[in-house]
Each structure stands twice: as structure tokens, then as C-alpha cells.
Image (cartoon, helix red, strand yellow):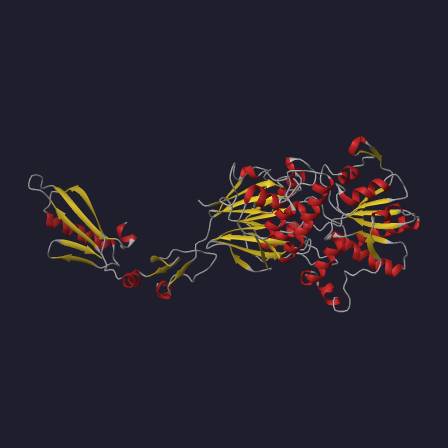
Length: 587
């Protein structure tokens, strides 16, 4: 039986370092190639030795697909393609292709130039890696080779994020990457058609969460920021440069305008200016409202939000600062946090998920003393708030996507094991489908029942209808007799006469013979006569002939009786029938 194999090299019962291998119809596809924010050693990148111990990955992979530009989904790409070695195609959407190298270069600067790490990819490697990228549009079916095709669907989440359908023959897999089922201030909700894949591979970051109303959360966020600023405190909001950052900027910009507030709002420079440039460039990927107002004014040109300079962190008085990165594991957000952590007037608002091992994760778990580099201890006195403005699907959203796509099997990645377990049970219960959650390096094999399409000739259908059988019904399969012709990669069921004619063959008749022995003192002719009389009484609706050459014929069945001179009482009854005999007659 054909099967599909799925092996996570990263994001198996874990968040971060997304990298999933799929083997389908003899093709090998790598879905995402991310890095782990919580590690600085070898565990930072996926273990590619699982694919091959030595040599390049090109021979083993048919293509690589990147769902979106977040580093936990694309951060290991230059390492994989340039240092391990891969020359095949890398597919991603146009916005992902534009933004990916900027984030990779920023990550490289922090790691190599600031922390002084070696054994890391260079700027040139990022450029060489991006040359292998093949950009695609939404709903565009791309033929990777003769058998393998891929198609992208809108995933919400961040600019350019896409879900991908991978298809080989009649087998298919859908990989969601990260997605959001509720539209926000700048992006729409994820969407997919009823493609009924063999496996739906879904993220499960918020597997057990059902989020409250977005409006309440936004009101709460604005209230907390306003209160802190009013009492002269500083607000630090660690964000990743794209996505949630723009969402919260739009929110604060409109609030500041409405309330006529004067406290400055800053954004870490460089990365975000470029980010906003790409939002303007790819405006078609944003939601309806932004596209409509774009003609009058660009939502991403902020009046109240200014570029941040690191010297501003020491300025007295209130301020709000958006700083990257979002998990406080490095960079500007961590530097500002160290300066502001000791003052209880200040506030830290964490708007998204933090991976284990990061400073953000430790603070959210209530740690009040942090050990920093050089054994220095940092006292955390500022107020800490966690408000999920995450652009991931919650449990409700994941269930909604399953209803949309109607998969035959479900596989969860990018989540914590305990939460996955809960969602797995819920999915199996509600949808009566198998749900898998492999750990890193563990392979899940799903047996598929591919449907083979066959065209049926009109003449054969007409003949079947003429026999007076029930009308064709998709829910009640029924048997049809015909000849199956396989030609030019397609299958057709036609009548035997049509098949002979098309293939230029002459008809041969196949006959089966069987011998039955019985003891009878009468002559051969008498025995045959008695068989004839018996058959006439039993098979009244059939034509039965007694032919002068000493045979009885019932439709295509021929019956003869013989005996030997040595044993005249032992009769041998010879039965011969053609292949298409009526079953009832034989019984």
C-alpha cells in the first residue's frame, strides 16, 4: 500500500526550529528550515545528518518550502543550503523572499558581529541562498517536476505567510506553517478550500487556548500603557520587527491621536523602517480596510511613532518603546530591559509567545532575579504583563481549519507535548480521524488509499442502463463489467467489443471443462436423456437443446456422456462452458 512519511527535524513536540521532512509518492520535501531561539549551541539548527550523514542534501531533497519569514521557520536556510549543501529549488511567496534576507542579515549581525560567534553563515551565503529561491503567488499551482506540484494559500499571521498543498498523483499533504483564523487590524484570516488532503500538518502553539475577545484585550492593553505613562513610567514592548509590531503600532497611533497624548512612542530603527516599506510594497497582502484607506493615507506612515536611538533609553519622563526581538533573548529589547528593570514605575508588556530558555520566558514565569552575562544578577522590579496579541490560531481556529480542509489524517507540530495531547484527543473525538504528534527525529507513516480516476465509455453506460439496473449513485458503488484500457497515463473502461476494435485484436473464446463421474447401469444415450429431462424441469426459463450428435446444450454450456468398454456402468459426464456463463445456470 502507498504511504506518506512525516519526520520533524525541528518543531516536533516543541516550539521553534520548524523543519519537517515529508516523503510522498517517491518525492522528499523539506517544509521550513528554522532556528531555535532558546539555544546558542548545535541545537540551534535542525539535525540535517538525519537526511544524509555525508554529502550534500541536493540528492535527497526534491524541494524546500518556506512558509513565512520568521526566523524559527527560515533562520537555518543559509546554513542548510550553503554550509551543509543544497542546490535545488526553495519556494516561498514574494513578500517572504523580500523580507527573509533582511531578518537573516540582522540575525547574523547580532550573532557574529556582536557576540563574536564563528561557524556561522556569512552575508554572501545569505545572498547565494536567496538566488535559489523561486517566488510564487497565492493559488498558483507550481509544477516542481512532472509528478510533484505545490500550491500556496493565504495564512494571515504575518505579511506573505502561506499554507502549502503538496501533491503527487492523487496523494496530498497540506502544511499550515503558522496561521491565524481571525483577521486583525492589518491582515486577513487564513483560508483554504475543501482540498481533503491525506494529512493536514498544523501548528499547535496555542493548542489549549481559546482566546477571549480581541476588543477586550486591546482595551486592556491601551489602559495599561496609558496608566503607566500617566504615572511617569516607561513601557517596553518587545516585538519581532514584522507582524505583531505593525498591529500594535496601528492600535497605539489611533489611541494617541484620539486622546491627544504627548508622551513619545519609539520603534527600534533600521529593521522596522524596512519592514514598513515592504508593507507598503505588498499592500495587496493586507486586509480590505487598509487597502481601502491606502488611497487617502498609508496606515504604516505613523505620526506619533518615531525612530528610536539607544541614548533615548536614559531620557527622563514617560515613553513607550517597541524594541526587537520579541522574546528578550538578545538585541535592543534586552539592552533596554536591563536599564528599566529596576524601577517599579516601569512596565514590560509581552505581546506574544516566549520559547523556553529565553529571558522573556523566565520573566513570564515570575523570576525576580536573573543571571546575566558575566555572572551579574539583575533584579526585576518593573511590572510584567502578558497579553497575547499572537497571530497564531487558537484551539478554536485549528478546529475551524480542519472543518474547512476536511483532511483524512491530522498531524500536529510547533507546540508543547502536553497541550498537543489535549488537542489530539479533541480532534480524534470530534472528527473521527487519526491525529499524530511525532517528536523530533520520529517518523509517522500514514497509509493512503489513493483513488484512481477511470473514464467510462458512454456506450458501456448505456448498455448497463438498458439492462435495467439501478441508476448510478455516488454513495452506492456497483460493479460494472468491461475492459480496462491503460493508454497515455489514463485509464478507460470500455465494452470488450470496443476494446478489440481499438486495439485491432480478434476475439478468442475461453472455455472451461470439468469431468464428473457417476455410476449408472443405463446406456450413455439414456443417461444423457435423463439429464436433459431433469434440466428441462429445473431450468424452465432457459433454452435447452438435445442435439443429434449426442450433446445437451444449455446456453453456452455443453454436456456429453461417455463410458469405457471395461466399465460400462461408470459414466463420465463432460461439462464445458464459456467464461461469460450465467451464474444461476452453473449453480
